[in-house]
Length: 67
Image (cartoon, rainbow, N blue to C red):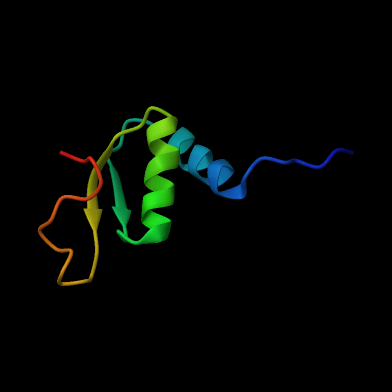
């Protein structure tokens, strides 16, 4: 039995995308973890439709290179 060296975050993202491949992707949180997940999705060729955050300073702003 081998050890699966795949990052658990990538595995989780892939599982979600397999269940709902045509749904828009909305990320909750614009901080460090949100940026990391955004970058994983970008490498996977996926587009993030929106970011949501409860920080008043971030609401209504564009995050990273989203349109």
